[in-house]
Length: 301
Image 1 (tube, rainbow, N blue to C red):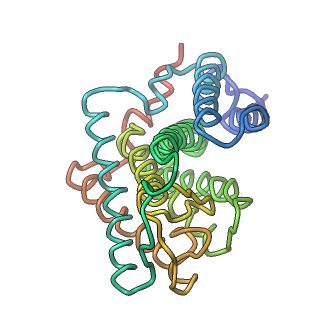
Image 2 (image 1 turned 60 degrees about the vertical axis):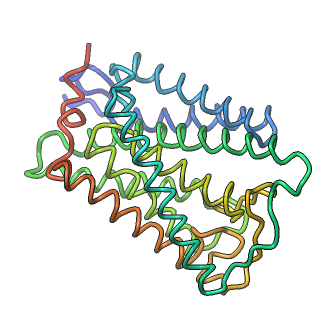
């Protein structure tokens, strides 16, 4: 008799149940953290610690997978790809901002160091964005994307990218829903967040490493909010390096939701796609989902 709860071959819960339990426990764990800590670096640090512990516990006792198998095998190549991802995310935002200022859609009206407490606030924001880039990628791509791919794959497709893309789109939709309650969220903005999730998911399944995704995610957020003073998915930062005034059409600039809410965000996502895709193509990673991902069940103890 086929069990709807466990996979007898793998001797563990089926992928759908693993993801369901992870979502329920993760939601309450992070909600508790947000209730204890105010919005700030310490709260995001605590969320990173709890997320890491949660993935480790699920990996050890439910997934039966080594923690490094969630994309955190920290080799020298991993760190190089982290730096590359950071450069790609920063370049995309810088290009978009240069275009926007060139058309007069943004005007620089001051500088962060003119405000009291700039260094403390700026340093705290940098840490916040590092933590956000890390734990959101670990949760959405490292754990859920990987598990959903396993549930879809099972060796039944001629190309591993068929279930790979299906899992990426599904988890990216969940990623977008998680941002739907952000301040000043718009339909355009949520669609862009979904597309960003897809772009962040592809490097993980292509390389088996979260490095590119974490780097892109961190740099996109930090450069947009910390350097240029543009809200990140609706969340503003007052002590940014540049203080700007938006004078463009919100449909273009994204308005109070930030670049993600408008055409400029879509352009930034396209730039990330081109730069990241060039690297993956050059290294022949896009031919198939990385063998480390497809062969995760070999790590079962």
